[in-house]
Length: 220
Image (cartoon, rainbow, N blue to C red; front, side, top):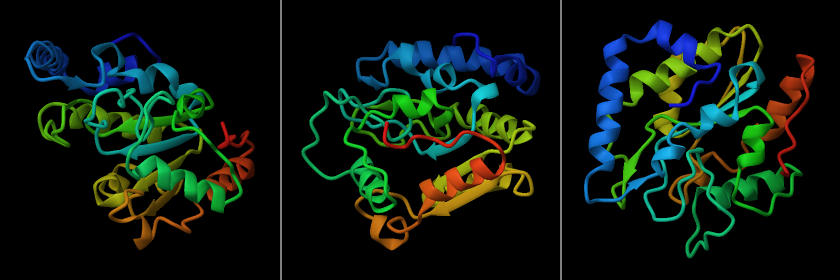
């Protein structure tokens, strides 16, 4: 885990033995024959791309894509080089963006991260084709603290929680200081039950502008 401005508050909040157990989990898991995603050097990429001092928006996902070539260490994002053969969450996210007036063509959300959007999965690793198989193993204490640190920070933020899994994280967030936006998950199974029409991207930018911050260019 590279040192970022998230490192010090995380070290203050979590016991030393947690980091030892986390490192042991990573070493053991990636040494197994089954493929694990994302690549080991991208596990903490969300924290590396979006500094705490620059964080404006937090979008919480469940865990990385379990298919080869997709996971980048950023929730909902995958490389432009990956060819999608079926509808998935990012396809529906782009449909909602277009409905709100933002035209985004690609599936790579790296530029969002560079603008201050923390694309955080609650579980940071996944075995190939075994969605959420690492839930409850090691990651939740870390990612819960990341959300709490973002909430404790003095700068108002937008927390976007899609689906039942992410919405449980609302209890970790100071709703008097920050804007919490909740909706159904953008997956093909649930997007039509409250994700489409949520208007979260426009609401997020409206809140940021109100608080004197630069809005996110969602088209990038």
